[in-house]
Amino acid sequence: MLNPKANQQLKAALGQKYIELDAEEIRICSQKGADQEIINLKDVDQIKVKDGYGIPQESLSEIGQEIMGKPKENYIVLHQGSEKRRLDFEIDSHYGLHSFHRMISNWEKQYSVSHV
Image 1 (cartoon, one colour):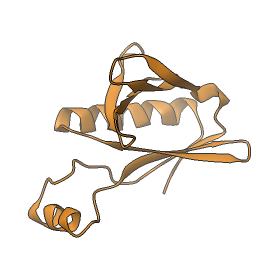
Image 2 (cartoon, rainbow, N blue to C red):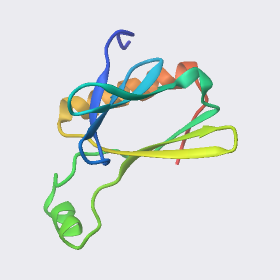
Image 3 (tube, helix red, strand yellow):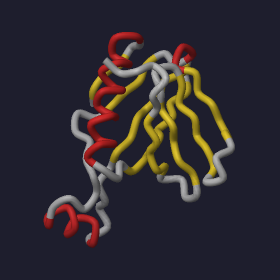
Image 4 (cartoon, rainbow, N blue to C red):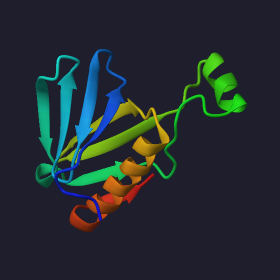
């Protein structure tokens, strides 16, 4: 089971920002570490996650896809009322990928999570 105090940092596809995930919140932070936005998962109606996440450029075919302008897509979609928000990010290690999968498993026990 995932330690509730543990969090997972992911590079956001937002430029100079990163995303921190834990059992209760998603925080979008600047590179200086200041919270710019906090999303409380209790306020989210549904979390949509992909079936397959991965590390970019992990294989030769993925490198080719990236060169052709089709990079690996890792994202979460949050539904809150009539609003839908997609958070794109990059996972930079196998440890980070494993931790992210554990976080999703933890969310599935507490929130409405569906796979796309």
